[in-house]
Amino acid sequence: MLEDAPMTEQDALVAIMIAVSASDENIRTSELVKMSNVINNLPVFAGYEPERVPLISQKVFELLEPEDGLETLFGLIRKALPERLFETAYALSCDVAAADGMIMGPEARMLEEVRDELRIDRLHAAAIERGARARHMTL
Image (cartoon, rainbow, N blue to C red; front, side, top):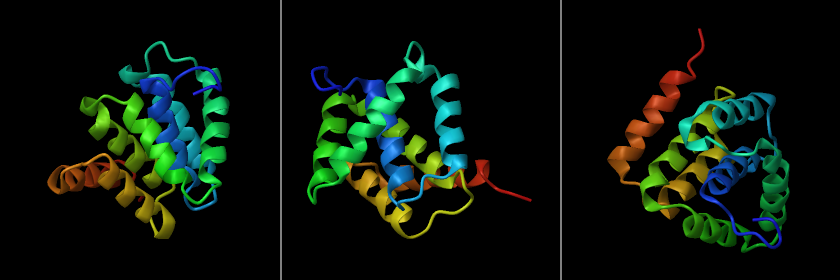
């Protein structure tokens, strides 16, 4: 995804998390911590170079500026991401959105876009969403 390098599968997962976090125009610390923990601990990110995150973030922000930018971003993500990781991408998106304890407005709409763009079955989406909600409950 760097100017001359294609987006990797891991870049695509990072990009979708960043896009969900940025969808409400307020990237919260809890969302950044969630993304960092995911990148540092999940097997799907084994071997990923965390120093790529700022580069991917910048590219996501650039892509989201024009009116058709979201379509372009999803096109790049679908091109880079094997279909077997679509549910993983949706689960990571839900976890990032739920990290601050609330999913409302733009974030909810963005999750709906992610679900539609990645063709996540409604029943599977509901299970993924419920799991994210359960993991991020507060007392």
